[in-house]
Image (cartoon, rainbow, N blue to C red; front, side, top):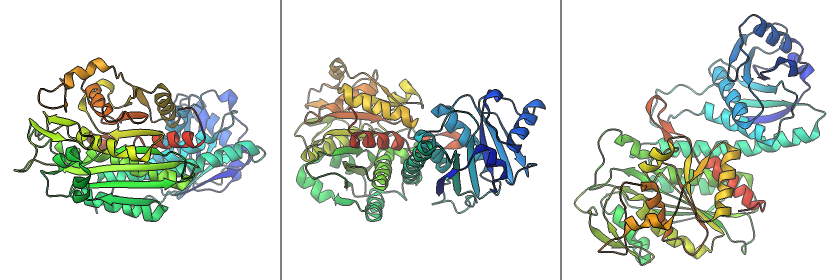
Length: 493
C-alpha cells in the first residue's frame, strides 16, 4: 500500500491527472472551496437531484467533463468529525475498489484544515477496504488494482501538510497491524494451531526486529502453569507460550505488557458448546491476534517505549484426558481453581500468563480476550468491555479508543460480584452464576494482578463479525496502538 500527502491547491485539483478523485463534500454547499470544474460538477449534480447533501450519500462519475481524472466520486460528510470522515472515505474507496483505478486522491472540499487523525483514518479505511482473505480460498477475487492513496493538502499550509503526513504514517502502521490480526484470526483452526501461531510470531519477530521466546509444555510444567496446562491436556496440539519484546526505551524503563488470549479453537471441552456457529470459535484467539497486530504497528512506528506481548495459546478439546467439571488445578500463582465449567477456559490460560508477567515489573498490563458471551449481551458489537480498578489507566484506554474509533465501554468491577466465585473445594471457582458473567470473569482475572496496574478488555463482541460479512475485524489493534503511543509520549494513564 502506497500512501502520501499531495501538496496541491483546490483550484488545481481539476487539472491534476489521476485515475480517480474522491471528493468529500460538506453538507452545506456555501462552504465549498473553489475547485474549478469539480465544484461545477458537484453543484450541477445537486441541482439536478443526482446527489443529496446528506451524510453518506455519494455519486460516481466516469470520465467527468473538464477533469484530467478518469473517475470522480463525491461523498457527503455531515462534518469533519472522525466518524463522518472515515465513513465517507470508506464509502468512496468501496465504490472505487473494483473500478479499475490504480490510485485515488482524496480532497476535502470544506474550509477546515485536515489534521493527523484524518490522515490516519483515511489510511486505515483504505487498508480495511482492500483486505481480502485468500489463505484457504483460491477462488477469492483477485487483488484490486487500487493500491495507492494520496490526500490533497494546500501546499502553502506547512503545518497541515506535516500533520497529515504524520497521520498517514501512523495509519499505515495501524492498518498493517489490523490486517495481520485479521489474517491470523480468519484462518481456520487447522491452519492456525498453537504451533502455527508461534511460527507467525517468529516470522513477525524476524521481520520487525523483535526479540522472541516461546515456552513449550515442558517449560510451562516446570514453571507450574497448572491452569493453562489443564486446558491444553485434552488436545493433541501442544500448547505454546509466546513472549515478544519491542525495546524502544532504555532497559531501566518499565515495560507495558499486553496479554492476548490464544485459544486457537474452542469446543468448550467437556462442557461442549452447541454445534450451531461453533465454527466461529476459531476466532477465540482474537486477543492473541490483536497483540501480534499491535506489536507489528508499534515496531514500525518505533516509539520510545518498551512493550512486551505475551500470548498463552492452546486448543480446548474434549477427549479422554480432558479436564472435567469439578477438577481442581493449581495455578502458577499457587491459588487453586475448581473448574466448574470447562468452557470458561480463557480465564484459566490468562491467569497463569498474568502471574508470569510479574517478572517484568511492568508499568501497566492490559489483557485482551474474547472472554464472555455475557459481554456481547451487555454491549453488543459496538464497544469492547473495559474493566479496571485503576481510573487513570481506564481513562487512557477509553481515550485511545475514542480517538481511533475503536471504542471501549467501562464496566463495573465491584468486589461484591466476586461472591459468586467462591468454592467449597478450592480457593476460587472458575465461573460464577449467569448474572453479571462478564464482570465475574474479570474479577477472576483480577485475583492474579495485585502486583501491577491492570486492565482487561473483553472483545467477544468486537473481534469478529457473523453473517454475510463473517470475518475478523482486527480490533482492538487501533485502540492498543494509540494507548502505547500515548504512554511513550508521557500522557496520563
